[in-house]
Amino acid sequence: MKRKLIAITACATGIAHTYMAEKALRKAAKEMDVLIKVETQGATGIGNRLTEKDVQIGEAVIFATDTKVRDSERFDGKKILDINVSDPIKDAKKVINDALALADGE
Amino acid sequence: MSKSFWKDLEKHVMTGISYMIPVVIAGAVLMAISRIGASAFGISDIWDAKWATNSNAIIQFLHTDDGWGGLALGLMFPIISGFIAYSIADKGGIAPGMVAGVLVANMNAGFLGALASGLIAGYTAKFMFDHIHLPEAMNSVVPVFLVPVLGSLITLILIQYVVGGPFAALNSGLASWLKSMTGANKVLLAAIVGGMVGFDLGGPVNKAAVTTAMALLTSGVYDPNTAAQVAIIIPPIGLGIATMINKKKFTPELNEAGKASFVMGLIGVSEGAIPFAIESPLKVIPINVIGSALGSAIAVGLGAVNKAPISGFYGWFAVNNWPVYILGIFVGSAFVTCATLLVRKDAKVEDTPETTIDESQDVDFSEEEWES
Image (cartoon, rainbow over all chains, first blue to last red; front, top):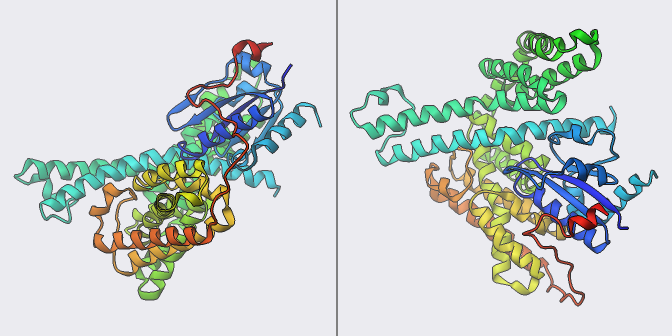
């Protein structure tokens, strides 16, 4: 069974970083054989909204955000990796490794 | 203070800014429409009340539209204050934050005043949520009554009697100091603002410079805004043109990004240049900073005045002395283009196939695999 993560990306303007971080995470996850669902909280609204079931399945949550995460109470009790939106754009594999390590309780 | 406190603080301020930006754009563009339209009639003071009764209906409308732009810009401080507080204390922060933000606007306490009122309102509301514990039956009293009323009251008292006065003085002092700048100082100021804007392309340093410059517009100080608006578009345009001149120096991905970057530059979005800054920051960032600073210094130094927070091409011709404004953009962009082409070596041809993701899909696997 593959490892599973969920993530939220958001930046101040909501048109560029948000989606670049999303693509970086998905690409790195694919290369690392990890399944990831990424919700984008951009200027046009919430994209690919994570369902209650998604939140249950995800082993850890990545908040790659420069702004407040909308509806963050959905993730109460989950393990959260809280980083800047630019971090996955710089090194998405490290972010995913960090999130997996967090899920393993290291 | 712990590191995470500062990171949280940055997040709260960025949240406030992200909600404020659309309001500023709405107000600025409405105002720009009215001023560009008015200039066609040879009018340079369309906001003056005398135009409200002009016999020409179009001029009357342009005057009214200018007022609408002003209404929208007037929401700037309440919105940023309210949403900083929202970021800290959730929904409960909005009421105290916005109410105090209106007071900040009325007291002319400026951008710093609005930051202060948002933070005070947010932390006050959060403190009340965290520390007031009533019996179960009365629990709803906190969010529906205590936080809106007491939260607003405490924030208003602090703004009115403690921080509002000094910030208003600071704001008007800063404004008159900046207004009195001439010659070399003015050019230096423009270069600094331009350099900050070019530094991190929509990141915190850029946003600090741009929002301060925008806020100063409301005090009638135009030079920092002129500098910022020139600088915003220089990196994306310059880098975009560089990819068009010599494709060999860039990977296929960057060539693709270059086209997008050029278009984003034209409409005034500096974020288009980010892929380049990520790929080779040590080369790209200094070039962007110098190019932006150069362009800003030229535009402001030669007397261009942009009174609207608009950097896209549709705003260029509304600028006073627009030929030198465009000259600044041209020289700055040309510097970025040439310097980039000079320092870059030809891109290596990738042998290994790149992993690709299907961007038309939200996920790269089936729902069954996810749920297994």
